[in-house]
Length: 249
Image (cartoon, rainbow, N blue to C red; front, side, top):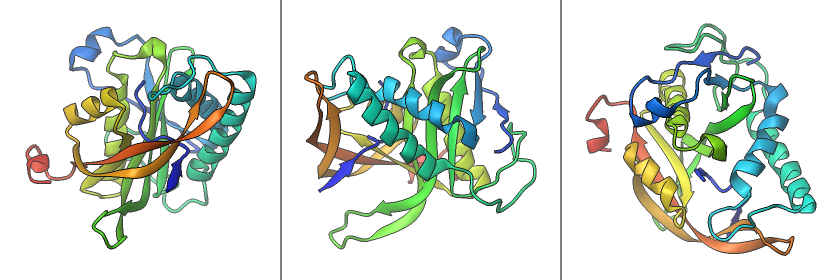
């Protein structure tokens, strides 16, 4: 049993640089003006953690409370900010230089990034993380390998169905491929989160295993934060072999 505190992939540096969203797809027709996708710096992790609690944990898929109590919000925000700080806080610079593609900033850490979507008022309205992590094989031997794991994807309710989740996924994939040199990207998602799974399938991800022994936190209507069973699906996408790469991944 393992507790999935950050329920992976929800749909529901120092220098920051805008990533130009793709100007195609149905979502682009409804995209609000002045939307930017940027790399986070350490000063915005508190803001991102609090945003994630509201966007993901409130009304969480699986029976979560529609409204968090002050105690629930405080507990989840404290844990979420601590987790974001542990994963994405800037460490000592490993490399510098201009990033490829549409990024104009500098990459100071080659193992983890938190990407933010901000509106014209510079408010966080979406986020997604990607980090080099150990990916389980689930082959009966408890083996694993190192690869880019995308997680913590969330979009503000007000801005959903506008193509922004797709933009964040693409930004995370670009980091994994262009900056870190990986050919595959992975994610974990709860099996009961059907909208998220459909999104990832549309973007080219395929299920490679399921784990029905996982647990997850669930804010309840009576003010508790319960620990319940869930099934985690691991999905994979080939990102580094051109147009037809995912057909053979």
